Image 1 (cartoon, rainbow, N blue to C red):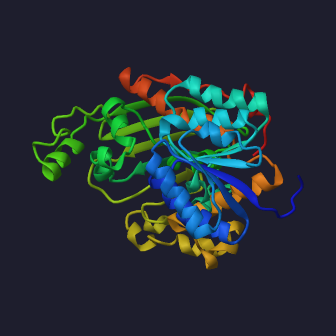
Image 2: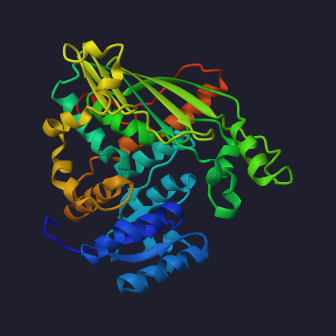
Image 3: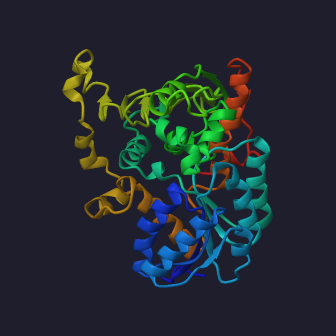
Length: 405
């Protein structure tokens, strides 16, 4: 295929909250720049599918295939790739269908429901050779990429542990799941796990070279009880709400500790049903120093020790390190930021389209997706067993020992 510039014909599967934001934002900009064409749209809700098709027709100037069945889209010979932005439980099955149809896959983030699902993802890739990229935008965060570069250059020494979380007040979205037709509600009623691990885990996995000389070995998870949603629903919707007396399985706070083959540990936190500010709780700790998102600060041994008990004076000092360690991708991009989530969406989708155009393997592949997504069912098992450690499978079949970062 080569690396020549050509228009990519793309199919969009899922037009809920995420799909709408991506199509009307980043993808619309790309289509107007003539780098892609939205050739097909799909949603299991017919009104959403028609809304997506109407947007493409009126704003982008072409009439896409409009369907409620993704298999109809996958039968299009002229389609180059698909992006999956549907409900969590559909991601892996649709991705497998797309790979079998020969369509390059961009799969939005979410959780898995079983280890068999994750194995299905890697097995299908090995059978077909068709790439699948997880569209984890947080791997393209400005600070995450800067810290990754600092870690690679040894600024923090040997990395010993990292933290991350999905800490986001989602009470409105979850409690209005029926009205919004949002899949989170059914998950919070029926499951207790870290249901959204990849925002936190993706950047950490890249820093720790997971699947490229290192891997996750085991994890242990515990959960608090669930009170936040019921209290919110009672206050906002009243005692007459059908959800007022619902018993939610999902605990308000889930903590997961992962052990890595290289000896590192990772602490993940899911906190989505209590009042709070947004945070990904990102931190990297090594033998020579650390970075922490909470104060956007760097602490280097021998440089900042005088602030040990008065750390407020160094809060926000990460900007000083950006002058030297800004990732080249962001150095080129920061003066022309576009797209959602402070530009991360544009960067991850631009990478995806470039990979499709050049027929190259993506930087976040099926083995990464399986390793990150399997944290959900494994944390569910560990919580059910009172926090007992559970093994994390090696989806690479030992190839992690020879694959290079």
